[in-house]
Amino acid sequence: GALGSQFAFTGSGFPAHQPATLFVNGRYLGRVMTDEHGMAQFVVQSPTSRLALGHYDVTMEVDMNASATQGFTLSEDAPLVWAPDGFMGRLFVFGARLPQ
Image (cartoon, rainbow, N blue to C red):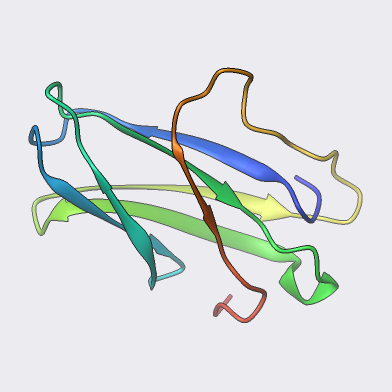
């Protein structure tokens, strides 16, 4: 997506009612709780600075044996991406100084 995009994530199959830690490129982003079905949703808001162009991996980890990673790339020629209408998830914002 373009700089400033929002990326929606849904994690499922995790232990129920547990805190899940979120990382972007290995750096702490925040925490969410899994629901009674072991699912959690969240949105990652990307920076708007050109320094942020590149690939990012977002990891949701409940414990050492329960984690999932999904990536996205910020590009100048990509369209702006928004979380889907009605998507229910906490919003997390990160800066441009994360390791690539």
